[in-house]
Length: 154
Image 1 (tube, rainbow, N blue to C red):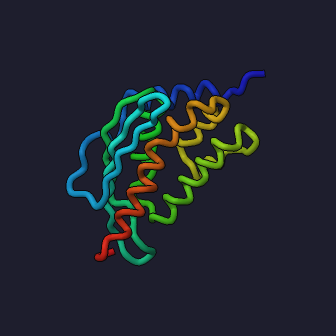
Image 2: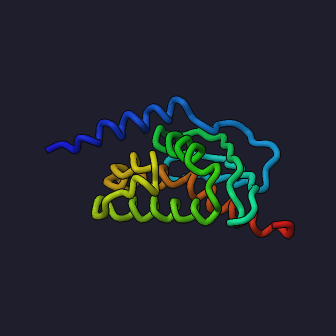
Image 3: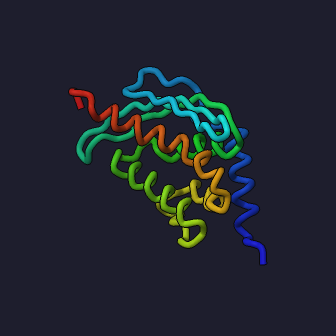
């Protein structure tokens, strides 16, 4: 029996690949990361700006420029919609949750409340060569956050 959500998830990925939320150079920014997937050639340059006080640093904005397959571009678009407004800790939890989901290869149920539209990438777990495509933007943000938080003024 086919998964009724698979078609919906595929549509969501294709929509994000076309719409490409967050695409563009962010100015000013606190950190930038360029990553390339050597397996397929996908590339992304992601910039992040932090703000907020109280609960800790918050992702104020992120922007990205990239090229590659629909999965990598859609994943960057989803991230650009999901991350702004979240604390750095909440973003890190989502990055780890997506990583675990993709490594589990269908063995765990995706947490839609935690991952939001990123649950659409659950099916990617069946294709190990595509996992890096789906994670590229998320790993770039993870590394950019480390850089941004290492700055003395933070």
